[in-house]
Image 1: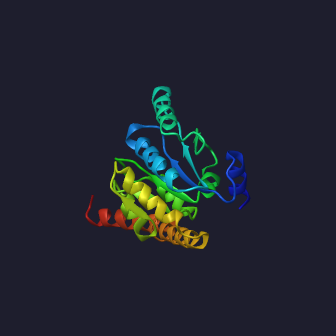
Image 2: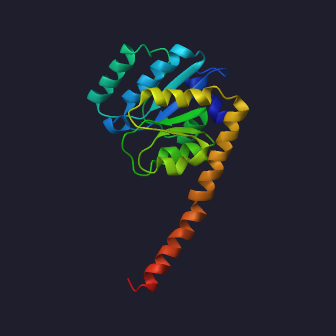
Image 3: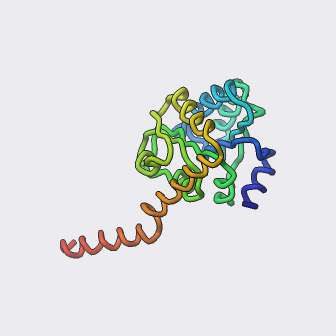
Length: 198
């Protein structure tokens, strides 16, 4: 789409590059260091991959992450993007979305990426496994080797295969978490509470 192209061009991402994105505030719980370690493993094996981290955080922690990224030799592969208002366009610019958190509840960013047709690799925390189902890959938290391996599995797929996974991800989100479904579930819950006299 046009918005995908515009965002990728703004980041200097070529059509031949596969882009892996992580969306989340710069906070220790989001565990960017594990993502960065996985990126360092991937760039040794492959060409034509780029990475972007979208989100902001405290100046001190941001500086820590930037320093770690440089120490790992990621400067020409990884883009640090602050807060964005155009998140659907941002998600659509990705080929693969990633969450490396070691703690989550219901991570909206995974659902948002999937709703845009982007397959995900996530850590097995909170509801992440439940949301992704069979459409993506789930790895243990704080395990950069496993994270890199699963991201590499997607990178080994053809564009058509990734698109197929993305379509399945979108269909799963619409089926399980679409507005109509949530309204229906809420109505049923309220009705059951009324019946119980609460």
